[in-house]
Each structure stands twice: as structure tokens, then as C-alpha cells.
Image 1 (cartoon, rainbow, N blue to C red):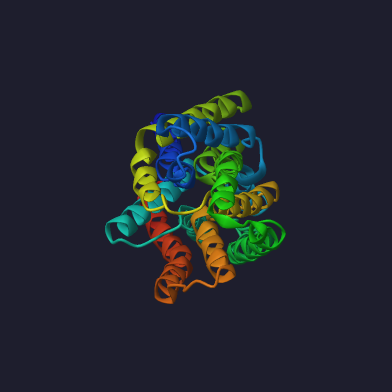
Image 2 (spheres, one colour):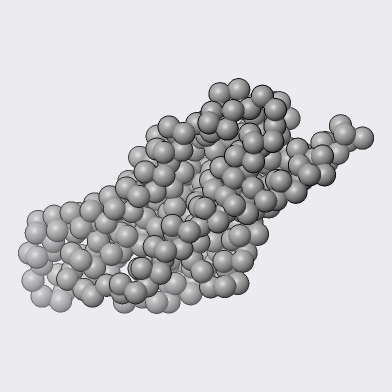
Length: 343
């Protein structure tokens, strides 16, 4: 019976991981600048973005962020059980759903990592032979948390610097409306390249789905061939997520960006892509939404535009609260499982 239940749970976890991959694509807004600039037809933009995010997810599935979430965050000798992984998924999904209905901007990355920490703490407290002080790789966790602080700030800084350089070297030398319009038409095609580049790294840095699969790989529930098979499935499903569901978010945001200059979109996407690329190569899961928000702030500062400090403060508060709340929530759920002998 225990083996049968475990087999069912593994199937459930795989299905939920694939569902998470769909939601990653469905909630991605990276294509908005491209669609708003009307560089290519809407359907073509969706296909290009979907292929890019799926490719990033598959090509970087062999380690990096997936390995951090699925293995490296654990202490030496500690492995996920199926119920631990199930708890992480339940906690992350429920907390994000609550936030969505409450209109609260939350980070799926922060929610996932908070859930992992909460589960590991409860697991170590009640599981014999596990030292709570070594159940987590505290050095890796510290690096992840530091990256959450530095990545938005570097996004702001890089955006500010790129705009200032571009303005001084090129934009300020344009004279007359015709030169400006012709320049912006050329920027449209650079924007296309930047958006595809950014989408690849959005997929590569999305550790929610592949992190769960990597956890199943490290505890022996999946072999390496099965892991890569499901990683490819996740990449394909993320592609469908953009094409089927993200079109509504993208179309809505794009309608608000029609007046935005392609040069501005290029700067924002390039800056965010650079941050995502660096974080991914170091195996650090970060929040793309937080990075892009701070890139926008950096651009606003460079252009001497007013910043909505109230909204920024609200976002910062939820940003800080998501991790501990998700940890507490996951800890309570796992304690419930443990109380019924399911651990």
C-alpha cells in the first residue's frame, strides 16, 4: 500500500510540475513590449516567445536553478521525500492563488523557496537523526536571499547606465521628428532580438517546475532519462502556456505600451535579460517581475520621471513577507502530513 501511494504521489507531482510549467508561460509578460511596438504580428510574437521560453527551460534543465531548488538547497545527506515535495507545491500554489484573489503582487520564486525552507525545518525537527542546523544548506540559501536583494538593484543600475550611455552617444544627436522616428523603427528589430534573449533566460531561471522534477531525480523516483523527458515536456507546455493563456496578459499590457518607444523597451529587456542570465549561471532563482519593475524605475530615474513610491513600498512589503509566510504555511501543512504518519 505504501509503495502504491508513493507511486501515485510521484505521478501527481509530475503532473503538478508540468502544470507549473504551463503557469510560468501563462503569467509571463515579457512579450508585451514587442507586441506594443508592433514589430511582428501578435501570433508570430507568441510563437517566438513560447519557443524561446521553452528552449531556455530545456537547455538549462541539467543543473543551474533546477539543481539549486531540487538538491543544493538541502543540507548534506538530506533528500526530499514525495510528501515534502507535495507540501512545497501545495503551499506555493495556494499562497499564490490567495495573493491573486487578494490582488497582491507575489513572487512565485520567493513562495517556492519559502515553502522549501518551512518544510525542511519541520522535517528536521521531527525526523530522528536530522540536525536542524544542518538540514539546510545555509550558505546557498544566503546566496539566494542576497540575490533577491541585489538583482533588482542591479537591474535599476544597469538600466540607468545603459539609457545614459545611449542617450549621450546616440539619442541626443537625433535632430527632428523624422530622424527620431526612423531611429525608433530600427530599434524595433533590436527589440525583437532582446525580447527573445530575455525569454530564453526567463525559462532558464524558472526553477519551480524543474526543481520539483530534480528533487524526484535526486531521491531516486526518476532516472536521468525520465527527468530529461519530463523537462522537455515542461518546456513544450511552457510554450503552450504563452500561446494559449499569456496572450491575454500580453495584449492588455501591450495596449498600454503603444506610445512607449522601442528604444525604451530594448533597454528594459536587455537589462532584465542580463540580470537573469547572470543569476541563472550562478544557479540563483530570482524574481523576474521584481527585476523588471526596478528596471522600469531605473529608466524613470534616468528620464527624470516621477516614481510611484506608494506602490513601490507596497510591493516591497509583500516581497519581504512572502518568504516567511510561505515557510510557515508549508511547515504547518507538512506537520499535518507528519501527524498522520505521512512524511
